[in-house]
Structure formats: C-alpha cells, structure tokens
Image 1 (cartoon, rainbow, N blue to C red):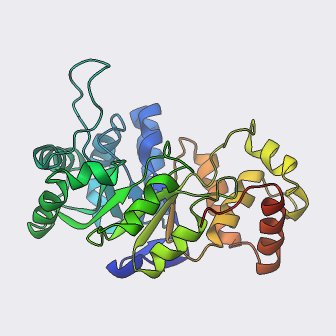
Image 2 (image 1 turned 90 degrees about the vertical axis):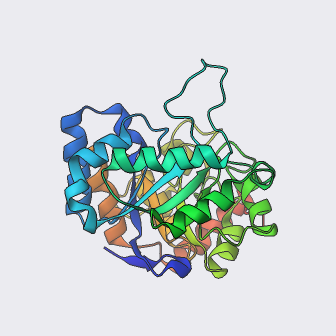
Length: 297
C-alpha cells in the first residue's frame, strides 16, 4: 500500500488509515477480526480517542502485541470517564485533564507511548487561555507521546475549516499534525490543507466517504453533482470519492471508520486503483466548482 511522509515527523504512513470510532458499535469478536484485518492489509495508521466508547480498550486487547506494525493516534481534553450528567462538558481544557487523558489512554491501549496525540476539537482561544499546550510539550519530553497535534471539529464552519484557518494564522507551530474533514463533497479546507502540508504539518483527513448535507447518500450526491460518468466501470460512489481525496497532495493519510470487513476490502481496492488521473480530477473539480462546492481558500 502506498505510503506518504507524514509532514516533518518523518513517519511513513499508509494513505489509508483506520478510524477506530466504529469499534464502539461492534462486539469483541468483530473488533478482533477488524483490527487484525486492518494490519494484515498493511494499513499502519490507527486513529482513536478516549471518547469513542471501548475503542482504546479493544485496540489494547487485540493488537497491543502487534504494536510495532502501526502508528497510533489518540486524543485529549476528553472528560472520560464522563461524570456530571448530560449537561456536563464533554471536554475540559486544562493541563491536569490532558495529563489524566494520556495516563488513562496508555493503560487502555496497553502501550508505553502514542505516536500522534491530538487536542480533540478545541477552539484556539480556549487553548490560548489554558496550560494545555505547555503540558502536552512536557508529556512529549517524557516520551509518552512522540508528536503533538490538533483535530478539528466537524461541526465548525466548513466542516472544520472554521477552526483550521485560525490555527494556521495563529501562533500554533508547536502542533506537528492536523486532522480535518475533507472530501469532494466538502472542499472548504482544500487550499488550507495544501498550505498546512507545505508548512510541514502531518495531515490526517477524515470524512472522505461521509454523507454531507443536503444529499441523502453518497450515490445521490455524485449523481446530482454530475460525477457519475467519471467513475470507472464497477466503481462505487464511495470508491470514487476516496480516489478523489487521495489525489490531494496534502493528504498524508485518510482515516475511514468501518465495522464491515467487506467495506474495508472495498476501501483497499480503491486505494490500490490509485488516485484519480489528473484529467479526471480536473474535470471533477470543474463540475464541483460549477455546483458551488468549492474551496474556501
């Protein structure tokens, strides 16, 4: 499987990663099958979070013994275990909270370190008023994480662009990696992704095969946007959209969550086919531009 250099970190990550959020929706037997199938396919990047139910526990239980085969990304700021009822905050931006998070995650993941440790959806202003970054840097010095990063909220304007732009414009060079939503159906971050990658940020992309309003499904979206004739024979809408995203040079790895071995195999086939050809990509972008699905920068 193709690998790309993950920004200035020097890590060689597979272009297809695994988003482990879906593990919260499967039983242990299926989790074991999925995680080992991911590694058996050569995928070497797994992204999770304390927020994702038992995801970290299942990774630790079923593939900790294969730790040298994959790069591991998790997140911090999460109030796990969650207390205080439904009205209590889901994230707390203090050094004490992120310290708790890494100790908790390492125990659950059954590992001594994580490769990429991400702030989970914080606004830059929230971090600027806290000791989170200072604490993260100290924890990196302790060897419990290799690289620190930030993950954008999909709820922010432009599916994360509303957070990405301030992080790029502000004094946040300490973050070595950025996770943001991007797809043919949600292109707001397209230009900013390229800018971030050029600055040496490792780019984790999610949402490449997620439904985006106002379309009812991926197939509905590609049909209404006039993209269907650009798909090769037998290619699904999801596979086309994955290959569209892979054509972006600022994408280092894309994390796709699945609870199905069949869907995992479909994603692998799309990656093996390769990114869209330059002429097909250009035509797809021309049609998307005409439909108003454009980059914000």
